[in-house]
Length: 154
Image (cartoon, rainbow, N blue to C red; front, side, top):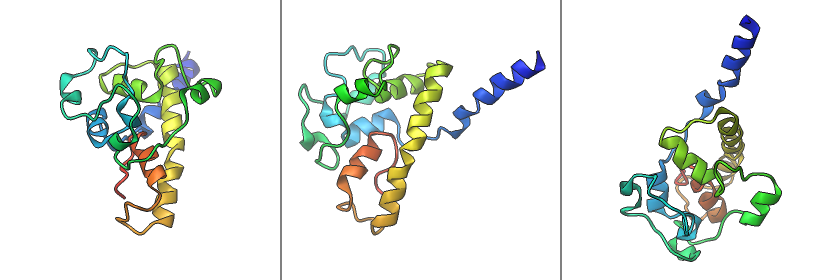
């Protein structure tokens, strides 16, 4: 019985590594996903304050992205890779918004947190290849890390 309990506790260690740098509200205000992430979706489950200054559009619009560039893969690609789960059919950002609202589903959380952690390689690439504060350097990667709740203003 002790071994089982220990294994469960070890499995929950992934929560300790999850330290996003931006809230969903801040991400939406800065401009992510061309403003169209939640199109056709009921957003009433999220605080209204998240959307007060959000850059939102019915259609994908790169001018609404903070770095005015498209970053990321298509939804079709996400589905092909198995990155869409029934709990969050819109993907990682929907999961993150729900996580921030207090929802916990350990088996899904572990996968999404590991995906978030693996995205750190793009932060490292920016730090390695760009002058500090040069926001014109690697704009696509900066937009991408913003969409994964990393600070793009490094």
